[in-house]
Amino acid sequence: MTAPAAVPQPGDHHAQLRRSVLEAYRWCLGCKLEHPESAFVGERGQKVNRCAMCRAKLRARPRPVHDPAATRRAYLRQKYGITVEEYDALREAQSHQCAICGTHEDDIQVPRVGRPRKDGTPAAEAAKLVVDHCHASGRVRGLLCNGCNSAIGHFRDSTEVMRAAIRYLSPEA
Ligand SMILES: [Zn+2]
Ligand SMILES: [Zn+2]
Image (cartoon, rainbow, N blue to C red; front, top):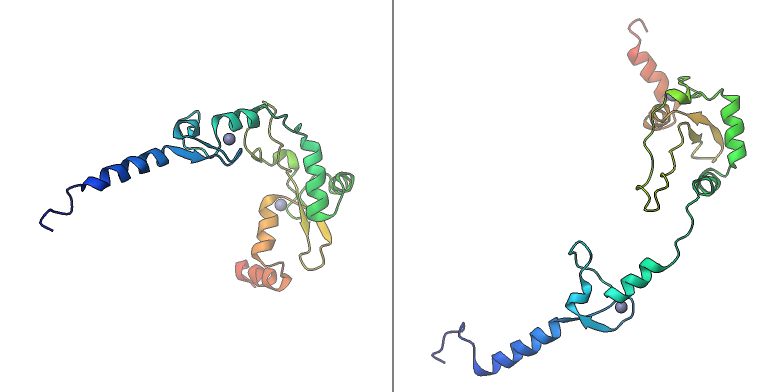
């Protein structure tokens, strides 16, 4: 009872040893086996959840071929319910210009989307004219530049609010 708490007691040493042995092994998320801690260090020294063997297997697996055209087709279909052909027809009809401000798509700067690809192919270029659709009906109204698209969104798609904004901005109104 006189020994301070910080001094290790005889039994503690073995408990500590057992614990350090246990801690030196970890379960792999991939193969569900125990491996030494050293198997869970990534190339950049970071901690990883899969053992070296599982990570090698993951690296070796064939990657799906990246096809920006297919990605775009799926995006337009899923998000707006239109085909690439319908998008292009709209684009032609609008002479490749924003349906509100008339900015030509050649004058619109867009960043590449997504991370640079490991296989060296460039990431898909974001569409310069975005699809504007009625949020209530889902109907596609037209193609807009990003600025006009977010502007009508900020006006909550309300012609009333937009008219109020025009009145507000008009000195003689
Ligand atoms: Zn593993
Ligand atoms: Zn515009």
